[in-house]
Length: 148
Image 1 (tube, rainbow, N blue to C red):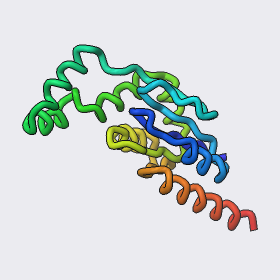
Image 2 (cartoon, rainbow, N blue to C red):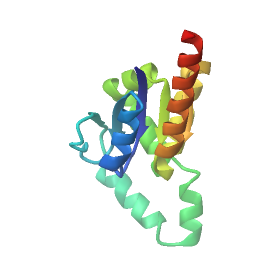
Image 3 (cartoon, rainbow, N blue to C red):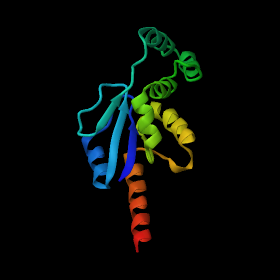
Image 4 (tube, helix red, strand yellow):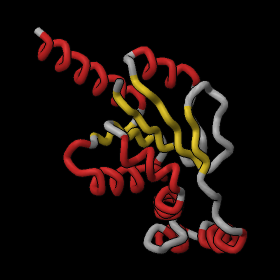
């Protein structure tokens, strides 16, 4: 069974998407900042940003310059999510054992990229559930060809 970890900071993952991954024989887990979805898969919630960081982030989002600078600072939501996954023992264990890491939201891409760099050549990172489903099919085809 292929271990698939979905990074969804906002918790935006549908039941249909999870079902399509399970149908391909994946062992699915979700890492999120939002309350973990009750979708019948293992879910790990990482801590949300502190109130002070949320205030600074809100202040920076008010102007175009602030939004541009925000992406270069530790206040950046993608960077915050990556640090939160590193601090959570359960999330770090899931990412270290994953064969496929799926980024389903913009703020998940940085964490997915960093986990792939940490995991080495064995970890595959994809953007979106449809790409993960295609990757699972390719892995399944390779396994079937090897069995012949």
